[in-house]
Image 1 (tube, helix red, strand yellow):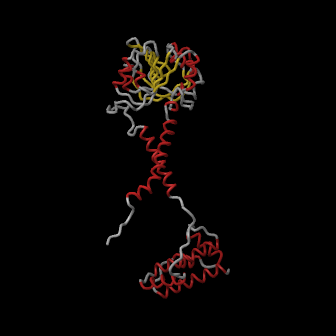
Image 2 (cartoon, one colour):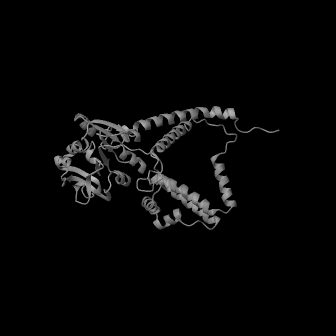
Image 3 (cartoon, rainbow, N blue to C red):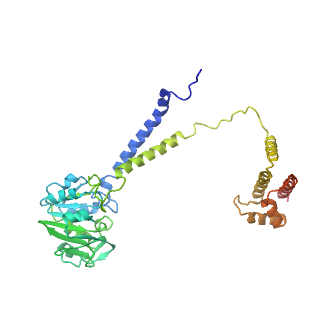
Length: 380
């Protein structure tokens, strides 16, 4: 005759359906919250973001001066015919060379590249090269004849720097390392800007930052503000613009799952009620337990373990009686007990921390000495 062990499929489903339902609801809610809080409106240099690194103030300033700002993170919006319009492309994201070529072929009159990579420069601003140098954020003079920079004057700039080809206008640098460069090719104006902080909510009101933004970015009545994402097909290109190993969307789902697992673990691991005392079939007195352990020690000649148990018990009483921390150094324990009892510190150290006894008689003597010491502690 066999006996079934474990749950049936129906019992398992009834036991798991509630946790699975709760987990699913938590994951769904977490994903919704993550998507809502990490959407385009809250990203760095977003025209809708009010965070210090956002650019809501710049978008509002442009709108007040008659510029229609359209924010997007969709590549198709950046490859629409753009004659007579300005396209601003923010940092981060991932686009391959074909994507950049599609943007170039769209016919934008004015393109502004914010901290661009090598592929963007090769396609849209040939001759401009990333120097790999970083300028510290500081107030700098334009040192160029670019009208927008001349009108703005001193501007707070800092960040990536670029070298300019012949015929380009290079501003806000040291002549070699520049943070703003304008090149003109194929009837298109391209501005390369190595700094993002200049136009952020945090620094727009400093120096001539706002004036530079208006005269550099607000040149046309329509501005498409494009923030590239990680949806490009160019993940196979081997250069510095390669995407992260784990796309942001996958990370969001991972965090949501981790949060759901934590909540379910706390929920399922809670106590269902007070601890219930169980009636034991046999009552074993503490003295009998102690005697039984002592017989085992004696039978196995484990004098070292018996001595260690005796010393540990004595030390516990000494710690409690003298207020000594449990992790106190042996020398500190010996010094405190010697000061309270008047005993010789060397003898106390040997008694409390010495070598294990070599015979039963020595073990009995150790037990007696420890008992006398603890009695002195109780009755000084």
